[in-house]
Image (cartoon, rainbow, N blue to C red; front, side):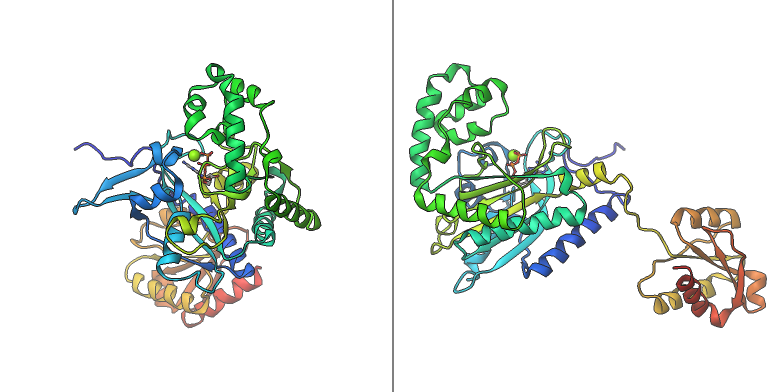
Amino acid sequence: MSRINAIRGMNDILPEATPRWQQLENTLRGLMQRYGYSEIRLPVVEPTPLFKRAIGEVTDIVEKEMYTFEDRSGESLTLRPEGTAGCVRACLEHGLTHNQSPKLWYTGPMFRYERPQKGRYRQFHQFGVETFGQAGADMDAELILLTARLWRELGLSAVVSLEINSLGELEARAEYRRALIQYLEQFRTQLDDDSQRRLTSNPLRILDSKDPATREILVNAPKLTDYLDEESRTHFAALCQQLDACGVKYTVNPNLVRGLDYYNKTVFEWVTTALGSQGTVCAGGRYDGLVSQLGGQAVPAVGFAIGLERLVLLLEAVQPQAATAEADVFVMALGEGTAVTAMGLAEQLRDALPSARIVYNCGGGSFKSQFRKADKSGARLALIVGEAELAAGVVGLKWLRETREQLSCQLAEAASQVCLALAGNE
Ligand code: ATP
Ligand code: MG
């Protein structure tokens, strides 16, 4: 029969890769703990109108990237393309922003029908943070500070840089939008196809165009910064001041806009040049209008999302030496009637050494093949239960990574001897 493979752009994360993912996830979880943020777990599927309303009809995501289908009752559902909409929906549904200012984080798969390439997949993973109820720039600053700390902890500070911008409030942006359209109209035919299409639907996105001819035209385009409302200006200045005070370096990029409609005031991205054109590893910003747009009372909000695949690629590029999940002790049974004792010893070891990785070799096998497996497991120590030894009430302890004499110890003392051996070997 023919084989069935995974869907294009949806990756298996194989055992050899998962230690790095786990390390990353542990670092993120620890960081959230230290900053006093709480985890929220959200469904992977939501009603389609949620994303249409939150993200906006004329965005790349809603126009062409969503996995949308009808369930058996005919309701239109969508695999989440991002986490913010679902998080706001949950906050409203459970009153989480009622007289509270939650700081939330989540992680999990997101789905977008895009052309798969390095750093761009159809199922990918985000780690996201959303905070509610804080209108001040201190909240924006805290998010940037904690991401800066993340890069330090991951050893990535040297390969990522921060870009920030302010999109202003809706009215200021509308005025800027008119000015931008007026300017770009003169060059309509010289713009790339996507930008021509966006000229009326979503002209701010043109600022984000990668097309060289379009970029050239943009050099003299009106700048959003010149149209900012007073409050946004003050807010942005306060953010810059806080970042300066904490020694976080940034570039103000006046062309930085986000792909989603719901942002206002601060937007920021952490970018790298080490991953080709998929260079944004973290993107965020303020979205004070979204909660009311989704039917709640207005609550200011700011958040960000990190693309975990891109972060893993970056870690691989910077630290090719992968984290591994190596065993500490490999337990093997050699010969007739030894397996029951050996497996029991492995259990005793797990009692005695709760944080050690104890691998029991199921299925037995020859001396040679068991040693090959022991070697591959990365274990430092092999515990060998052999037929003749067992008859004499002893078991063998063999060092696998260094030339040291094999030990033999009483069966009843095997667990404590392994503890001693490993402790003495630290
Ligand atoms: P891009 O400009 O790269 O398409 P985006 O603006 O669509 O990104 P966001 O919606 O802001 O991205 O998502 C936040 C982060 O999630 C991105 O910065 C990126 O790291 C990651 N990301 C987005 N789409 C994908 C994808 N298809 N595959 C892998 N990671 C992705
Ligand atoms: Mg995109």
